[in-house]
Figure 1 (cartoon, rainbow, N blue to C red):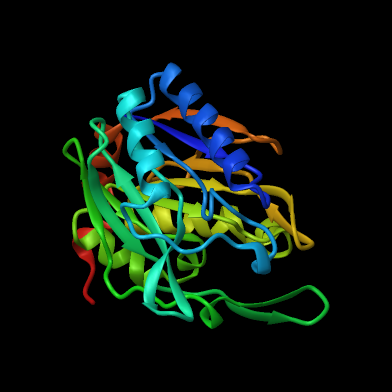
Figure 2: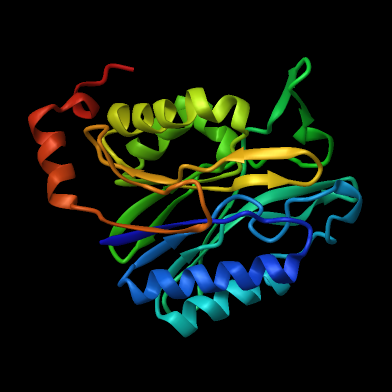
Length: 264
């Protein structure tokens, strides 16, 4: 399977953000990607006061990426967006997966919400406006089992172990990882999730400055089950394409059967 991570710098203009996303998907398809992964909040990352109204799964956001998947003949994981939530004050942070025909193949709602206070650096309470999802999701992408997650989920290894036990061979992480934490933790956490679950990890991040005064780390990458970084995006908007060797995954799991040897 050939996978692509699409790195974007979403701002406060949804139509421009979607135009950029489509161009990156086009480039991924031209490079022969079977699956392209976009970052968290690919359609809008700007001031909360101008945030677009939340949408249902089959709203404008979902329709846009369903059409792109069908047009390009490629599986698309459409990062995430604000889905209509359980009440007027809360949305869901939701990833959608579309198959080559544009049909919706999987929906995942972010479970772990980013509630963090780092004095002088980060003050963010995601749960103030977003409700947590409750269900881990593994999607079947043409016979390959793909475990879904979003950004802050990365810090919770129990989620990824559940995905691996459910058969995941690839773990996807659309993200908008902050610069302050990303420069020290992003790669280490991605490689750890790959090693401990003996899975490929495909992580697509936002890059650069976003309103209001938010900077994301980028460095989108693909990591193999041994923890080796196979491809990493430079510090710019763009596409990185990597071939995933499932035979190598099966070989690693056979030679070092840590998943099979688990006791808990």
